Length: 472
Image (tube, rainbow, N blue to C red; front, side, top):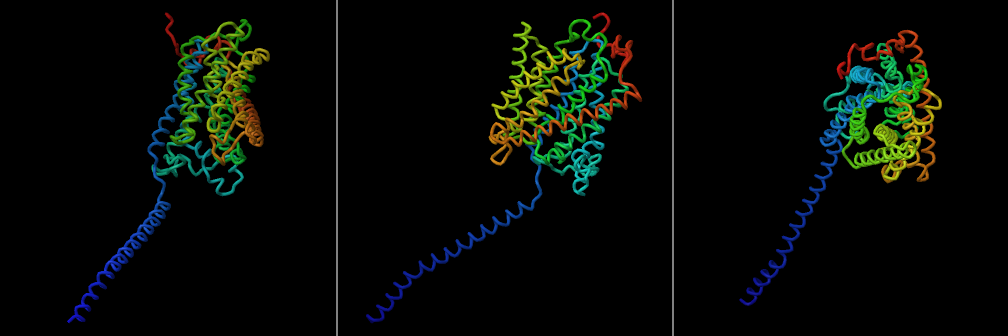
């Protein structure tokens, strides 16, 4: 009896000791199985994410829609008012009409084939030598783009095409400042169309569309070479070849602007629109856009104050036109550097651009006696050159990142050399092609109005309209 009782007690003790161990082992096995399932699920999800197509970024898209509107506003009404206020009242409508015409016709040409020439890829993908000059024909009329076609920043490519359209619009509009008050509208129409096709499109492809300057490593964040040097050099060529306005410099001083409040309003709209121009060029609502916004505003303020101070010191009176001109010079110069320069660069580029542009406008132009009517070359051409070169000095990895570009100030002198080559190439190409186009159009259609038409004003002689009633 005792032996049997001992046996049962032994069995119970053994069961009480082994049963928890078995349960723990079973739980451990279940836990291991669950862990393996989690790892497997994570791997599958990771592979699926890698294979999933990019999705539209609504934040970036919303910002780029706003930036596109801002850049359009720079031309109409911004530049139209800025230039319109600087001319005499008998020519203000001609300026507005020229800006309106450019906005309409260049937009059509850009969507038709301009975008494809600049950002197409068919020539490059086929290893054609033409790929270094123009992109191709694969995006004519945006035929290969759908609502779901995304580009950098995960924004619709059709939006990117429209954003770039606004750059194609404002660039030839800047040239208007060189030949204001004396150009025949019919000749102007033909010249501007040819210039946009033959000069602007290839240059934009070289720098932004994968062309040879971009391959070389040239920095042009938002248009120092493509927009401002391109337009500014062409403006100088046009001013020289078209000749001076009737009475220019014989009255003892430049022609007086007819509406300085227009100049102020135009400058304000340009200043505001330039935030879309520069901060939008990163194609995302991120820290780079914020920095571009910051340095654009800062360089503009510095340049405007420096220009005003120079006027005040040299001519004893600070002027609104001077302040506005300085602001535009700062906007121009910071444009190529907005994606690579920090606060130090903004201060330096703003100040230096104001000094150099002021010298060109106040001393060089009167000395050489060329009639760059509204200082398109003195501000946009010279400011673009200054900004493009200084980009190679003040680019910093604090903005571009640890593997990004940096300028001579931070030890990379090669980048300065690259910027000099890009600047020189832009100057030569713009000057030579503009000279050829001027010669052709002037010989076939004519570019300058008659002395009688110039005397009565382009508003009447070219468009048959008055800006102001005769009682005013």
